[in-house]
Image (tube, rainbow, N blue to C red; front, side, top):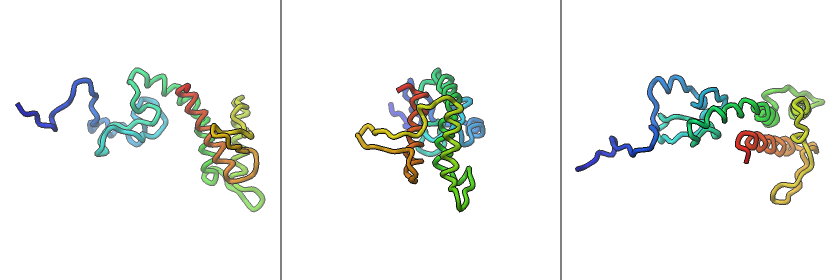
Length: 160
């Protein structure tokens, strides 16, 4: 008995392809219901598969609602980091103040309003013992702080 590989589907594996209706529904977003993040990961190798964000990919379907709830609850942290990294898209600087300076102050205000002073810029040591000063005026400052904000966002969602 020979099995044609295109028709072989091992038991216990979910389908990795999408139907026409699923492709139209998905667009560019994560396929998990209510998730605001882009779908960036798939098991498909031809682009036709189901696409999930990095938080939903590989998770059991019964976990999706809880993950989506946390993403929506803490999405403001991700958006704050995005404002730091893409300051020129959000703010208009001038000869006296750059868009990065405006973003820096604006994001500090967002974090204070949320009551998360632990996420404000600080001097800190990385896990490798390198000192980072997120308060000094350099272009690296925004990237270091944004990276810490994204780490905090991931911790809020996965608790690791």
